[in-house]
Image 1: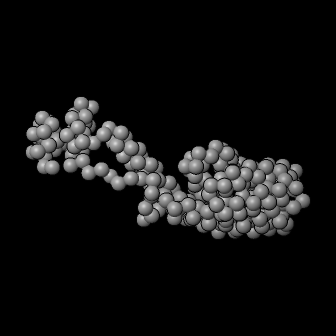
Image 2: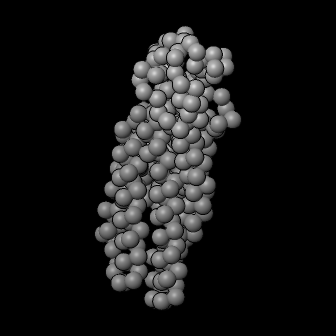
Image 3: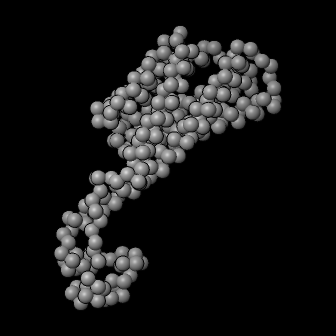
Length: 257
């Protein structure tokens, strides 16, 4: 149907039709109703279409988040390994204070924190997408707690405070948080499949090791495996929402004109 034919049948100015098509104006409700009647389109069809467009936008946002978090996760894993090696050496060797090393150590800790926020933020977004409150809350608390731990490391280095009792408390709290975080994946495993079961199981094991305190060192190994599994899970979900993959939940766009 040409613009002229549409104008003739719905009695609307041709310039108005042109501006609506160009997206220059938001048509009034009676204008939309008149156009829909001429095109024989039910209002319910438009509501369904608009809902689909909203879901498509949300999917695009999640895709961008997961892609960014996947890259951040890989970088985080590399820096976290370097950070762990340095922390173990500082704890064992009790090396003397160095201003130059202190600046480098601070930069490393802050880099790890930023990357961890970007990495773990993906699970908050997945919690929103899957309507899983536990995943959202545990991701936020884990980010806050990790920030506290990294800042404590910096205070320990710069002020020379030996916080052995703090390490025990840190291990206990970390264990509880990782168990809660992992439990969210087990909650989702019924609908999301084997990857979520594996991630949840490794996370639970990591948390138990930390809560036991005496197995905290092996827990660091499990934590590394757990975080690698999380990166894999992000990649898997990233591929699912990729724009290259057709989303079956979205219908075909109606051709109005």
